Image (tube, rainbow, N blue to C red; front, side, top):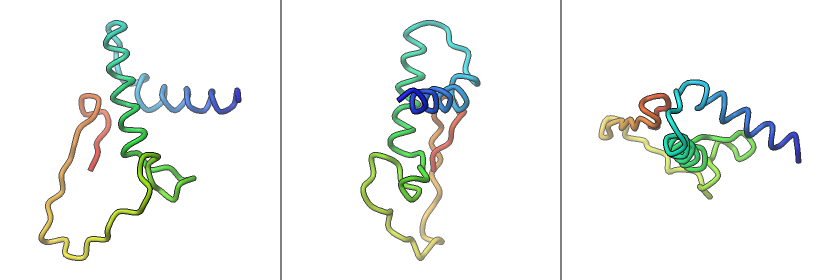
Length: 83
C-alpha cells in the first residue's frame, strides 16, 4: 500500500499544496476539501477512460457547439479551472 499512498500524496502536493500558501489548519482543511471535490468529481483519470471517479458513464456528445457557451469554474482561487 505504501506506493499508492506516496502516489496520492505526491499528486496532492504537486497539483495543490505546492501552489498555495497555507495559513492555518482550517485553511489547510478547506484547500484539501476543495481539491478532493475536484479530484473525485471533475479530474479525468486514465485508468477510468478519462472519467472522474464519481461518474459512471461518458457525458453526452454535443453536436451543435454554436448553441452552447463554455462555463469556467475556478477552484482553489483560480489554481485549477473546471469547464
